[in-house]
Amino acid sequence: MTSKKMAVGLTCCYFKHLGWPARQIMTNPILTAVIGAYMDTKLSTRRINGFIRANALDMSDYVKQDYRCFNDFFTRQVKAGARPINTDRDTLISPCDGYMSAYKISSDSEFAIKNSYYNVEDLVGGADIAGDYINGTCLVLRLGVENYHRYCYIDGGFKSRNWHIQGRYHPVQPIVVRKRPVFIQNTREYCMLYTENFGTVVQIEVGACLVGKIENYRQAGVIHRGEEKGLFRFGGSTIVLLFKEGVLDLPQEIFEQTLRGKEKPVRFGSAICKKADH
Image 1 (tube, rainbow, N blue to C red):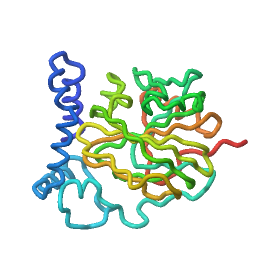
Image 2 (tube, helix red, strand yellow; image 1 turned 90 degrees about the horizontal axis):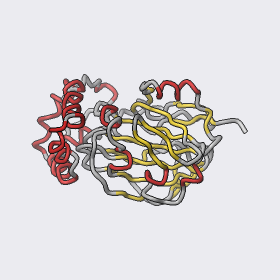
Image 3 (cartoon, rainbow, N blue to C red; image 1 turned 30 degrees about the vertical axis):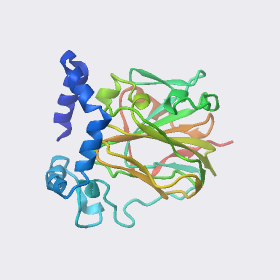
Image 4 (cartoon, rainbow, N blue to C red; image 1 turned 60 degrees about the vertical axis):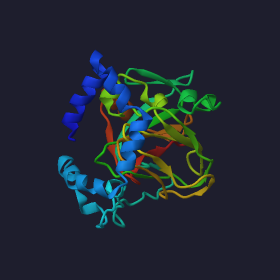
């Protein structure tokens, strides 16, 4: 499906009264599980060539292989060197390919994304950490279906266990985010990253419509900058990063672009901004 056709379909589901039944079906975890299971079958490989054409994918970055199923293709590996990791310790790297927005967390730990208000506690299912992120920064990185769907650690250090929060599967396209607080309604998984250079960072992976699985590779342990953390199976998806006050030197221009509805393209392992001077 092309992005134009998807936008038309989502407008009908989320902005038309008669779209409610379709929306209930589309966001149901059972449907996502069924489609995810199909995407793991050999039969699903027939979708690959059409998907490449519809999304104008450049396959030159990826390892050539015979795909056993569509999810093999969707989670395909890049070639060695295709996503170099910026090694400057004072530089924050992107954990994924995608489109970034930036938000300031207020004194009551809330921030607005489009027309929806979020609270840090809500994002992490009620965990009592909201006070630590007052006046901090929230980065939202949206992966489109055309993006590389593996993601990495932003820095070295230590990670906590993973906490899974079951929810629905709303799409994460901007047209839907304007209508629904999807990042606290969708299925998601989060952990605490105790990083060497950016303090304690919360990383949240958010599932979306038809994402069969958020797959994080391991639980608590030592982590390394640029090390692959996990992957999303079929569908669009999002990573949310929470930073404490005074950690990032993020240009004001990025916040202003976000307010204008403009997302900044980012790339796995590449620089986002500098660490703040202290």
